[in-house]
Image 1 (cartoon, rainbow, N blue to C red):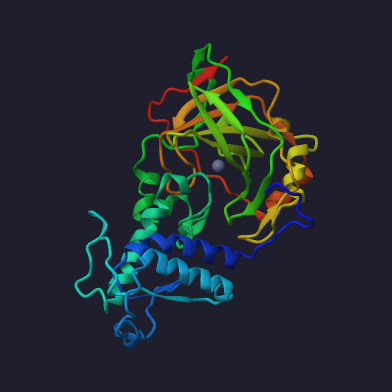
Image 2: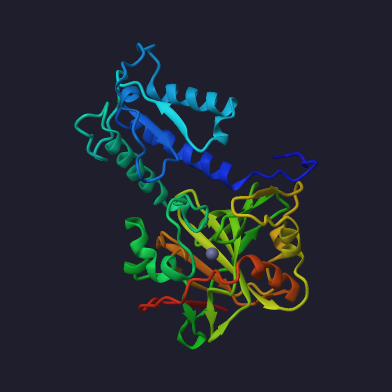
Length: 370
Ligand SMILES: [Zn+2]
């Protein structure tokens, strides 16, 4: 994305989700037992076209299954099939398949066992969704599981919604936490080295928050490691509580290093004057779930968001959204930035409450960097 788009590009929810589904399915399909497989299929199995599934497969052309599926996907995309609710892919039963080492047991009759194929694909998709990459990105690879902030799918239930979300309940280093200055380890600490520059970005409404996905080379160097900024997003009210105070909102800046470790910087927001960076994001805020809007070239400069005072609290925690993976390095900047009442209201219209409750500290040390 190097050109300024004449008009912000928009995609519909359904198309994005379908595409994600298809991409997520591409790998499992390549490994799945041969048979007939449908993408985006609802749980109850429709009357199976067993004839089609059991039909003799076309002669092998020497192409691998992966290639075959890629070709089918490409064809489907070109012919507009992605607009349909279902896409049917045929996997040639005669093609040699590479069984995953110790992943899922292969069904006894792969060519006709549609149910097993579906179970396999669901399990594989779930395993993929549980990867840390899905993480705090709020990208919701686990879109088949509906989690939220209240009711039956609220934070108390997250761990029960899916085995991969178990850490949400069993984890001992979960976020967010209540930070009490008097209980922190006070002393000198390294300076956070932000290297942020005007960058291309797109903003998405993922159903849980407004998230800005960043391009370009924005980095944070801390603890001898350089973390690249992937995205930032918002919570209303702030998830963090500092000295018994919950802030109006918080921005989470999510970074990742080459080793795959995550470092999240929290910028607290207090009611005040209009926030210029937020104004930019809200201008392009997609109103419907799944909508994504590309912003003008080099539009987002996160130096506009950072407070002047870079002192911070530091501790080890987790993602604050499922799957609640731990080993996330948290830095909560002490000085809040302003956000106007109008800006708060606008976000609250779409996300009236998207903050996980406070989690137990469990003896963790919180550093207060002076
Ligand atoms: Zn967050």
